[in-house]
Image (spheres, rainbow, N blue to C red):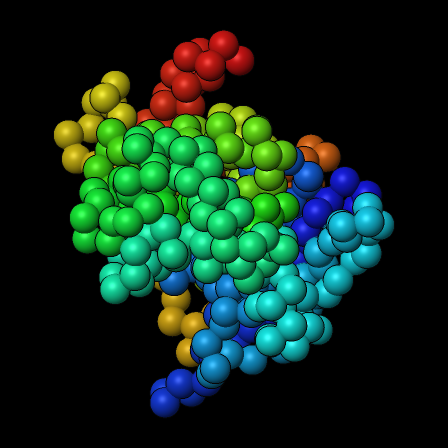
Length: 357
């Protein structure tokens, strides 16, 4: 395991049993998270983003089978010693008792499904504190007030007695973040944390998570389909398609020098005020049905740049720089030369100028 990494996923492969057959949802995923950094996993719905992280937290559905792989977590004990744990090898009860909340916490997209509507929010925060820390009831109550203050909720003592329905969507998401932070975790996984919120509240929640990350030294994983969120928060980006990572790089490499046609499609589909096109671009076709695992490159049927070999063999990850890799045969030395779509090329040039690159 890399000395700086706090979490590493190696060759993760997961299938789901369904009435229609076996769905091969995750097909050899590799991912790493460095201490204090923010990694984003981006892709369309159904690409496997959430399933990948649910495997790390023991939240996979009962019909899931982990065929192979490792999820290595560098755990720091209270006495300062470190040990490396393969989270996939831990019994679920042990994982949920000793790791979830205490070391790895998760923020989900809809706060109303994360909160108990029949319980005061103060009690819901205290529940995690009493479970994961040695605090007594009075100390847990004081800490819960501190956490509400930390996440920017005014009059925290008064809010402790509120029920979820008495708070706005943004306030409820802040409460969910406070609950996630109650065990003082090392890693915060944010699964579409702003999807259910309006745009102005989204920005505030993202700024809040960023601020808390710096103050607490957290490592953060964002699961999102929103490239606007990725540009605002991420250090590194993993682009996921049909259960595989198809491109990985730092945020500048992905946004200003993308190499995979799927990444080109995602960037082209972002709204742009400077474009000459009257219609918003969308990637043609649909993601593959993983009940019938695609032969070759899963993106080939939707790829205007597909080569003959794409129908026969899946491409490996080709190295572009030490931090930038993409799984496309277009990067093979023998591949024909190609030009980016003109509108995307113009968009990337504008973006580079704006960024001063």
